[in-house]
Length: 334
View (cartoon, rainbow, N blue to C red):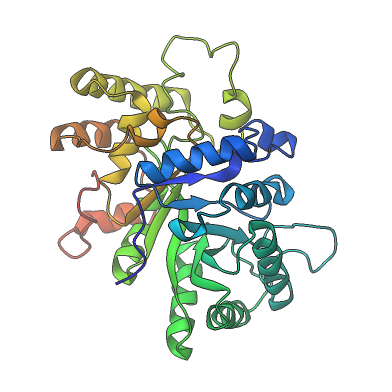
């Protein structure tokens, strides 16, 4: 049995606001952080996700102060690999940088262990053996409980898992990925891999870079006061006609269920194979708990699957011609 996580996870990119990029997400301070922590724990949310590069470490610092006296009640996920400071060795997943990065995160968080330590991106310049040996060492030294990755391709993850198995080292048990009703690439290769290798998905930006909050609709201008231009424009391109088709389908389901656009988009993800938790940047109790406690019907899921269907890349479109030999994961729309 592996670590038990809540279906929703509070993303801490909104904590700090130490750079222009992160100020567009939020500037949560210590006192507001304590309030959100209490709301989360009361709602049964036990996972909190940050990274060393969020506001140049300020996110970890603020959260570390907010959890004083409550560390034992929660699970902390943080990440390393992106450049954190100047210098040729202050980025990537080398043994040098990972040890330095882990010690820095522990200090800022005010804790002596990290529950889930993610490689924020794949480092093609460092041997995979060096990365995993270092992570295994951090696990054995008690500084890290579980290791995970983020934004890996299928072969990156599979190679890493096979090397861990070869040497008996700690394995990646989680993969933090982008997945949403307007971004379903995860389903083609990474989801079948995760099913086969028992790797849980921690979904970041489950609302499609703020496109599925209910503020974007066909024929309507964006709100005059909105973070959307800064957040949505930073994500992958989503054609307007495709986005409006998906939102139209969500609106139809909203009329049937009485739930909001955002809640429906999150609930759809919670029904998908391998999804362990959704990382959300909630600011209030309604945003925290609205996606749970109810279920979309199979017909509603099919409606959303159909509206969000996109062109399948090669070789997956070819494999789907012989699903008797290449079955798709359950509940994934055709």
